[in-house]
Length: 276
Image (cartoon, rainbow, N blue to C red):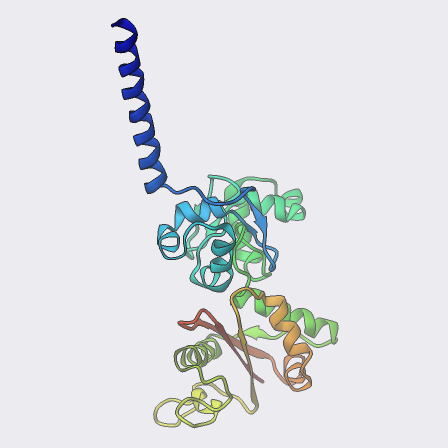
């Protein structure tokens, strides 16, 4: 009798443990990955376990296969601002401009800055806002570098190589460039001719046909890229095109505007507007 009683208790316990395990497996499926992180084609360190836990909507749509999750990040997640992995530290900060900033990552990624300024988070954050962002430095691991600051830094790098003065960002040109990027992303019309059939230069004019800024010369470089591409690849594509490169390094231009927009299919549209 005693042995039968113990057997029944053991069986009840086993059934209970199995039920709990089954419930956990249904509500929290494990990611199919031998390693917790992987390096993607664009150089990003990707953690499928983190991605699955952070974005259950993706898991619901695609399942929990590590390769499928990585492909989603490259094709869509990156452009949507999703994180590929947990930040290097839990001490992330939200800065005045809305940027997520990881001081430990920043110090490790840019040791020359840490050597000069130390590792105080507030001082590093201040450097990023005042200098680092414009220089194209990344604020945290996995941050996209397809941003106006990075693109401007790379354009000026090419101009310096050509012994030409830097272009400076202009607020009005930025608005014009953003208008151009937005309308391309919305309509898919990737052309110097606007969706309404007029020249890109009409974006420089208000509704009454008056110029929004004083200029005698203007030009436009456009880019369209998949979300797994980076800013360096964008600049290289312009450099490889004689017409685009001529605009990019022309000494005639002193000011620039940069606009970026993401289409519904995940592709990124970039407009750069140059003026003298």
